[in-house]
Length: 296
Image (cartoon, rainbow, N blue to C red; front, top):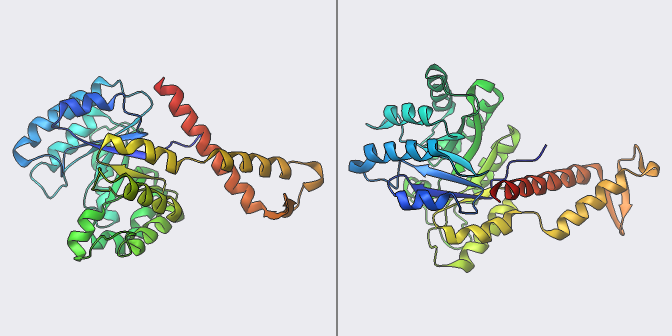
């Protein structure tokens, strides 16, 4: 089964109809229609209506469509959740998730409202408590009623709350990212990196994409379409990686290697764990190819 690619996840303000229209042809793997941070308070009711209309209209190809709502502690949270359920996107993104309770409360409310099972939950990891509770938040994914599928890093909010500084190389954020990656992997969730704020700095952006990839994240959230191409290329398996993966799987499939835990391939020792990694590489590549076909 092909994996669902989440290399590039583009934020779009629901209050910007032009941006929503362009999203239908943007080469991002997923889009987040945003009702929260990017929408001014007095624009939120109208943006909610526009978001529902855009999602119901469809036309996004194979792209995953996610709606970020305002939190339940805000004046707009309840209405946003009801509208999101009515729009039936692929997922609803919950902001300011501090613990597993927020996931289960939202999931129960979605069930009570009749949300289709295909509408999943994504969780913003953007508070100190979210980092400290990363394991218990991700663990709710074991409960099918939780709908939890993806963790999304919110580094701008974390910087604000912790008084840290995001400098080149993000030394202040490595621990947050690594803790959340470990939590996501332990409980079968995907995880995407936070945004890179300077969309006019392609060199810095590429370096941060490579760092996120090397830390184990599945992709990155974006604030501008011109970041998509580099992001997609960085988080996709390279041609060389795909070729190596196929060679590893083929080598283990040889009769003389049946039942062996380790073999030699091209002068290197290769173990069964490398075969598992190779299968994952090919699954991701197949998912990307399927998404590209759907967009044609």
